Length: 242
Image 1 (cartoon, rainbow, N blue to C red):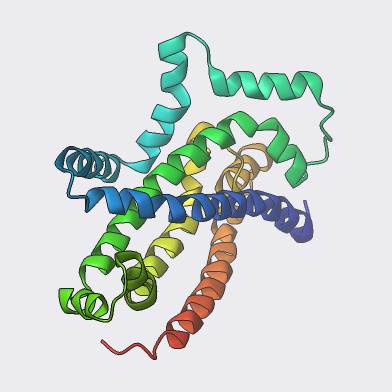
Image 2 (cartoon, rainbow, N blue to C red):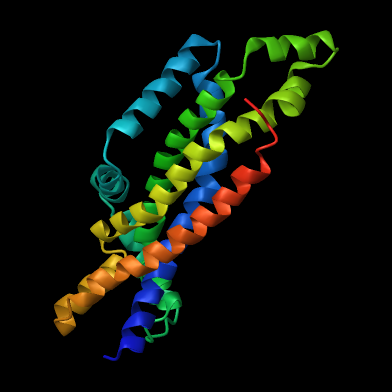
């Protein structure tokens, strides 16, 4: 294989990594907010259930969570649900055999769904702790000042607290977002053909080891882009002074 062919082969795998990254971020970031509110709830049972759930998810390695989501339903119900999704797609849909991102998606849809569920739940819990810390860092005096001005609780949160919280959570959120793109490599533990799995396939079938190290270039370029974008966001929010 030529350098260009290997780059394209790996790029298709990285496109799948980016899909995992994007879906996790789009679904996990909003989901973290209600979990954070539950963790701060004055209703004790809800608060402790939320805190226990977050503790469990943060305490178990993400790879193990992927295994649990992918394999446990089959053990409980006697049917490998996610494998059946793949068999259904292969049976009823015509899939191009061209190594494209479409082929990678269609032939691994079941496993990909399991990975997305595990990633979304995991990162929602991490994001929830960041949200909770940001909200609780705002002094009670700012809430009281809003109430004195005749604002409702929701107005105080929306007009006074929210923008300050966003400014304070951007740095830790940036770290989690950068970690997320690297964590997508864990999807290959159930044979999802993200970029690392693609490189390992080249090593096994073509006896080419260097593409495995070449994958680092893809991650570095994307992390560099994220760093620039998130840095610009921090600058835009710099008018809030702590």
